[in-house]
Image (tube, rainbow, N blue to C red):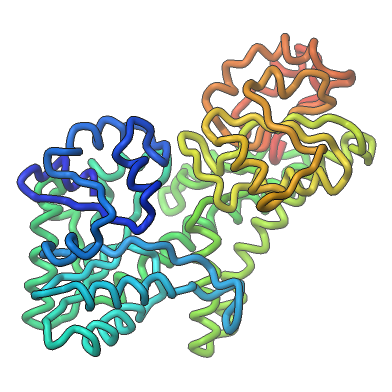
Length: 437
């Protein structure tokens, strides 16, 4: 919404939420999420044609287009628990729109949702809207955290799905015209509703599949003496494969990949496709195994015991340039090490300490084995091992000679992102290993 406001200053954009604290943060100098370049975009448009408020009713009444961008977490209860998407917030916002609308609206699904969810939205609107006409579009988001602003400025594609009716075509054209303010027309794809909804799930599934595939080979590289970076480079030179998403690591995280694959698995099971469901479920299982394998390797290398040993974990966000920790591999790694009675000390440049503790230990939980510090050097002081779990650029420029001198000996380093020069680390004195090395 901030990018639309920036690129189309004649369009009034109102972002509303029932959480007063969240809206207050968007109106403050400290935005509630960290994303490179976002501050500047918001500052430019806020107060001009970008407004943040809790006036949900007023915003809906005055809008021509309503974007639905609520959370769709994986269900933790009932039918489909652990796989299906929890659509309670989608249903709630549909009822709110129906209650507040006083004229025709275009409703745009931005949330990542199961295919056919628009039927639910349309059904609720039709039964509660007092004859008001609505058109429902699907406009899934393909930006990547950490590069979101650049992805929005110059997207690979914008996908808009709508009903193949005169009214649906007009609604699609209306939204196309908004994006066309800055996105070349040839990059704006229009489809039917179901294709757009499904494309988001499938795109994330394919990207996650590539990560799990290369991570599975990283284990084979470690067993045979091959180098995963050399293997990835060799296969990535094949134009049919390409080099992207072939970087071996401790595993993928984030808000989308696991949730969307599990949603896809549930859909396949629902439509009687157990073989397809099993195939995609394997992508998630491989990712979970990779995270466990990384922690297990630390334990095995430290003489099969990390009890009462200090392990410095560098990085907690699921990737660099974001403070998002959802499904971060660091959560699993920290929990596994604490289960082995290790003293885990975490440093991340953007994730607050309270959030790290809550993610690892749960709400209101405490454990003296977990501590959070304000620098990598403090984390490594007296540590038996350092584990790099997020590929923050600052980790590449650390004074590892200083870190080595401050650690217990022998000093181990485990690069879970393959961003450090293992040869240089070994020359300093580290017993250093990477993924697939």
